Amino acid sequence: MKEQYRELLDDVHLSEKAVKEIEKKGEQLRRERKRVYGGSKVFKAAACFLVILVLGSSAAGAAVHYSRMNSKDDSRVNGRVENDIADIVINTTEPKAKEDTTKDNGKSAFYDVKLSYVPEGYRQDKEDLFLYRHTKENKFFSVILYHLKTKYQTVRAAEKLKKFKSSLGQGYYGGKEKGEGKSYFAILVFKDSNYMVYIDGSNMPLKEVKKIAQGSSLVEVAKKKDIQASFIEWTKERQEEVNNFRKIQFQYSH
Picture 1 (cartoon, rainbow, N blue to C red):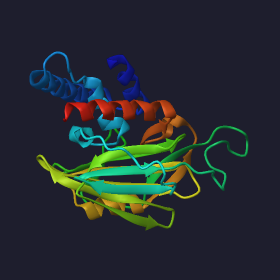
Picture 2: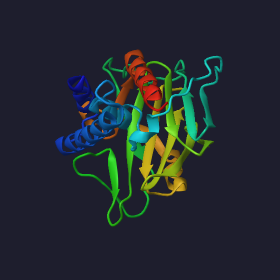
Picture 3: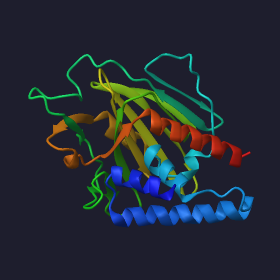
């Protein structure tokens, strides 16, 4: 299983330094779970990878709760908060405009995220280009671009969840203060498209995280390797992995 999630790390082109740090945190979490629950319920390091990368979350605690989604709600963007857990569902759509399939010359098109707003004091990491760090304080945010091949469902720790709009789409922003600092997020779903950008911020104001997402847009790039955002193809298989992971975590937390 560890090899499986090493492939996931490669998919979002993290630096080797970042990979080792995630593996280190995952191993610490695994040892703690083993101490609490015993050998029969070992929390694998791979689960930590799944939380941080697939769920787009900077904190492992974001997915320790499991909540069933309302499958009858057919709206494109849906979300609710219950017991400080936000349930979020993004449905796919049939693109009305030329989107991600092919360019005019028949070759596959690739997209990246363009940020029109970056808060003062933040600089893009030289190795992990999807990550922006504050130059003086322990604050950072990451930019994750999802291409939805199937419905996206996730949960996040959040005291509140609010809708917002931009000229290019709509989404949610929210989060909560927990642990050693604040962790906020914003999701912008681009209209007439199956792309969405996920801004995950740590120790920074919620309004700033929202503003980053509101100013986000899609820009075409020549090759997949030119994508600077952490790029994730959201497939049925990946959604099933997340659902199974949540079920396991729900059992551990009760």
